[in-house]
Image: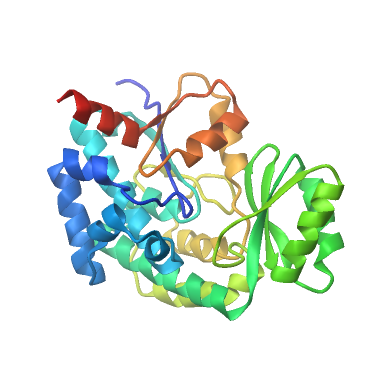
Amino acid sequence: MSTPTTIILCPGQGAQSIGMGKEAFDASPRARELLSAAGRVLGFDLAGLCLSGPIEKLGQTDMAQPALFAVGVASFHAAVEAGFIRPTDIRAVVGLSLGEYTALHLAGVFDFETGLQLVAARGRAMQDAAVATPSGMVAIMGADEAAIDKLCADCAAGDVLVPANFNAPGQIVVSGEIGACGRVVTAAEAAGFKAVALQVAGAFHSPLMQPGADRMKAELAGVTFSPPRLVVYSNVTGQPHGSDTEEIKHLLVAQIVKPVRWEQTMVPLAGEAGLKFVELSPGRTLAGLAKRVNRRLVVEGVSEKLSAASSLS
């Protein structure tokens, strides 16, 4: 038996766009079935929202999270049907933030309907926490973790301001209250870094999300998990989850208020020879981050492969 070599990458919030999932919807009966089932579970036309928008609604945290989960899972099954992904070849599944739920579902930790209900609850909880306190996120390019820690300490001035996403070498996102976010943009640019305020609902992966984390702890307590059948990486630790399902729940709660250690996960994987990386729909956000880790790393996109196959048929 050959050694599994495929790494599946599952996108998180921010990857959403109008038309997402269309290539899977068009190519795969199973994908159409899943997207239709998602709408029935959630009580609204999820497929219509993904395909036609409006983007203002699709971009809302409480809508984007279940939409991204459903499209990611649908694209996986479409790719399996098309032969782009062979389940027996999967070495690990890695998801960014919300994408960790997609990864855990694909590893058999919970079924599709349970996953939908969890991410919908997560989206509502995070949206409500974001509305409660004016806050935001800022991407800072060119700084290392020590420089980011100093910027946060210098610019907080009594507000919350913390590292939120360690995306790749030289790209770190910070989260905090609005005033602190404005100060850190100015300070980062003065220090020679590039800083960009992100269009997000609030300060995700920060202590300001604690009310959302508390709600998700209660939500997860009523759900039965199974040990993962595939290797799935935790965003909080940057390491694979173990078989302790209560610990997986604990880390999913912590993920809402703790930084995402994407770089810590990807750097070792990107340095390992012979691995094949495949990004689920939608978009190519994770391929872009992978290039920052290793410029020679090739990440195949399910969206592109399905679209190309459809154009040839």
